[in-house]
Length: 415
Image 1: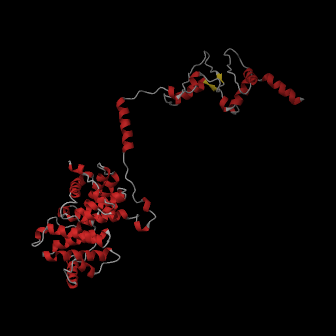
Image 2: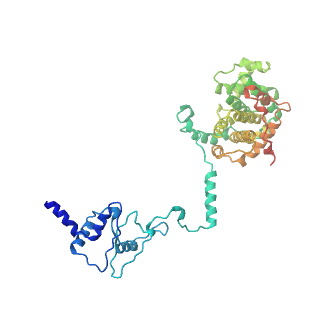
Image 3: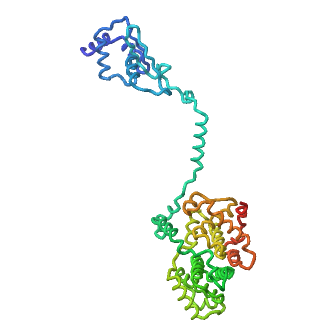
């Protein structure tokens, strides 16, 4: 009884504002205003202050005085846009009103403004155009692809140091190059004879079904030997056969025997002559057989171009046509390989195609390849004519999916 009596008397001494709030209920809260002429009793004021000090009021319903809000506003910087502006008004006696704030009774200026209605500062038209251009550049910017990521788990691909390998190849490729006019030092042979020999060796290479590396190394050995050793024309074919024999010993798993090479030459030479020429060649070259050829680079560049089978065969067809031509000796092997890939892409797609990835891995821009590429297009157009058609016949078979019949990129010759 005593407890109930104390509870009933507690309502009597409770401030009028709190009694009104209790009547309204938890879902609706009244906006209580303390009249400036009204003198509250000391117990009610002390109870209110005690509640505020102990923060027992619900944070959502926490009373905020305008004087306190003005003090906060004076010490903090707020953004002009998207912020709630509160007035710093006080009554005539300087006392701030005690306001209970809730979702249902927010002032209009305190309610958030929808994003669609927010006022934004007008931007300069040139700034807007700059932003659009930057966005378009970001969208159109081509990134260099990691072409070795798919070989990360393949130990034979040596993805960890493959870039170092090709950096080394680029550094030493000049050691395998010859002077583009070395034939002037030969007294009995000329560049036309060299072309006939290599055109014939392309067919021999195909008949023995040898790997690509063997053909490229064979041609390299011939040129390096002829640059240092004078040869009579009746021994030129022997030089070609011995060069292929050395290349087979270096590149092939199963090497053709000397007797097979003699039969290929229609018994023009004896076994003794073959072995003597082999000895002369390795001593002339100081046993330096291994040099970076165009094949070493073209395999890497085709990978950078993400080439399919058709594009790969067309690139090899173009570079083999270039092996026959003495005029192509002025280009280093890496540039020859890059130009073959570029020309093959142009012929396949019908327009100029040279991606950032290709440029990165070849270290050649499109402009640097145009001269070599134009010559390749010219060779491609004339491949089926004349007497030197060994490469054309080779790539006109089903084994090479009739690659030689592909239309050349003639538009590269227009410039």
